[in-house]
Image (cartoon, rainbow, N blue to C red):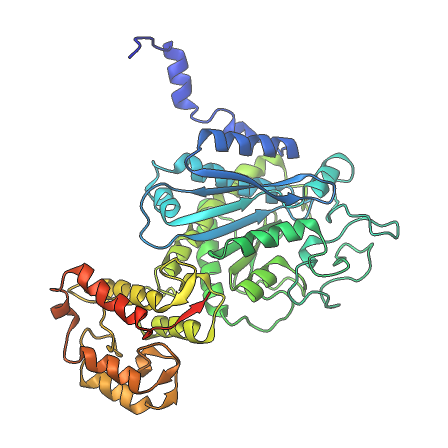
Length: 475
Ligand SMILES: [Zn+2]
């Protein structure tokens, strides 16, 4: 070892400034080039935690940068992805700074803050802070209130509203405009714009995305799908529950209220959250950041950047923890492992599902391995012995007995993709092969089987999969 030592004031400075310039960076709105540079610094400073990429190029050829962030520790669940993107609308400058701030806090907190460390060890973040770089540079240099991208429309007008260009319920006249010079012009077709194609492809390429936020400003709202209709989404309760949690965390930080309970803004079709949720099954939110009203509106003063980021960060951690909970098999996030959860999984395997969280084993397939994984997780959570639930235990009480037979018997010879209804081989039918599963395990309790060394139990369960007792469907 060299005996060379740094002067004391350099040591003190480096201790006090672990990432020089970071605080100052968030004191002002930054240029596109400064975003690029900052992302490069993150990648250089945290090479084991980050992957820097370009997800595509804008109409004018600017790279759309992305940073993927995840921890290096061991994960308790299959890692699912939290996807954040910002500043799809050029004039909403705060909506680019906030995802950068979130990246900053994740990276600087990993390994020191237990909550951040746990979140990063069990999830991945995919962050695209600047979704519309052409529009942003035009807003910065020419027209501060520019919203759209910078495609020439051929009629003298310029720009497509990227958040009306997504391919789910695209083209409805209630909520988007067919007229090129309108602010909400939806483009010539779904995903006609390179920016929306790039943002879409992130989700298509990573089929582990479970949650998503598209940051906008202003209004202080947490909006969930659908935007194109006032009808509730199938997962309305869960979407609202997660929004409520995020809103509470936001308010706890600086007292700002973000509406979540009746957050309908106006009809909008072709939005990012509708495609993320409607096409990909991702729990997706638009968060409209500070301020509440048109004064100052898009002209949010730079001294609001840090507090806006500070109040948003714990909300994003909430969403990441929900993502972990979903990835652990508690699909209705009520802190219980019960029939509602496993039956949701069984329906997904039998009928197909676009919900990434159902792939508990993380192998890209929805199949019996996910059921085996769920039975093990649920047993650990519910049973005193923490043993895996056994095949045939319809009522999830830890033993395969007459009660389970009666459940099978009352549903036998029906189409019923339900574990708790007796479909133990997860083929959508309650029939003789399910009886055979029950019969093979009857009068055994999880507690007795726990004496079997765990590898043997795994072989037993995996054998069911290999024998075709559990069917495999492409995910
Ligand atoms: Zn917006």
